[in-house]
Amino acid sequence: MEQTEFKQKLSRIRTATSITGKKYHSIHINGDSIHFIRENKTNLERISVEELYELFTKENSINTAIAKSYISGRVQSPAVAILNQFNTISTFSEGTRKAKGIVSLPFQRKKPPTISKYSDEVTFFKAFSEVVGLEYLYSKSLGKPINSRHIFLSKGYKDYLFKEEVNICYLKILKALKSTFGFTSASLSHYVDGLVINHPILESRIIEFDEEQHFTPARRETLDFLSQILRDNYFSQFRSICIDKKYLDEFVLKKHRIKSKLQSLPTSFAEWLEKSNETTSNYIGKKKSFEFLGGRIAQRAYYDCLRDTAHLSKKNRGLKEPFRFAKKTFEDKENSKFAKIPYQRIKEIIIEELKLNYSISINGI
Image (tube, rainbow, N blue to C red; front, top):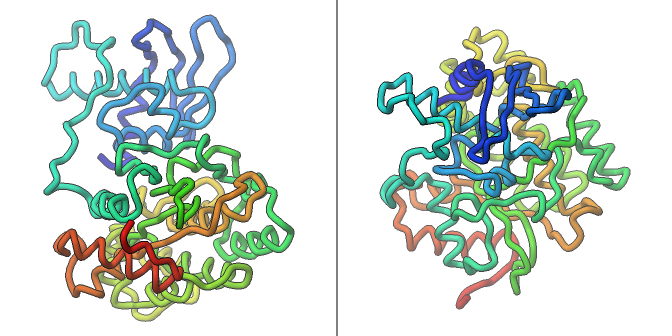
């Protein structure tokens, strides 16, 4: 289910009740948030629809403890109650369950996928965990979700207390991305693909597995600025992918459901997208602080920057620079789609990339 459909169905909910009997009313959608009022309260509270959607799509079953990894603020209980009600409405409309007594049932989705249906990201992190040790690695792909207790990651770059040169860099990045600013302090920790904590060799750092949607013209612009303040571990490699026109046409645009093809690399991707007459969707739609067609693409590039620089924040003491692995690197090495690469070979490439890009040898661990 895409986020637009999810949001549309979510808008039908007016009340919700938790499994402990707590009631929430006056539920309604307002922009990118769903608002509600607690029983015996008068103040309106909000939950990010995007965070709620992430929880809905990533977890097979939920409770308030799991919700903490996705939902910012102290609104995990109403978030779970609303998803319970969402599940109730969806199930009822499909005619697969009788309505009577369904409200109090716990939120439950389909069974987890079998090994043959693992996503590329899950396969990568399974392999990575076997290379570095599962006890050190956190990732939602492994059933060990990351939350704000593990790492500080805010939507607003000013919250990180960066040094002035980093703040200046962000001003340049956001200007290039045509941002209107106005960022909230909501947590992005649950968006981190993986996190190694206190590893004897890798220490503590973010681990990202970057698929096609990350290699956009917007991302290329951010890498040009970041390379001025950070050393080049993966910037050159990632930049070359971002300017690979064939890859953009065949994979990146396709990942964003964009039907048009690039005649050449545009000076302004946002302007090119506007002229292409593409139908707006959640993949390329406007986002808060990025109010234009392609805003979601610019937002993702900005969020990637925040992970690139999280180790520079005073609030992440002990965190080292991130390690990023491009899905395309694996596919280029084997001339094969990632899903068809032998599992043992994926582990070998991880070891090779750690040594090549980060001068880290972990053979024998």
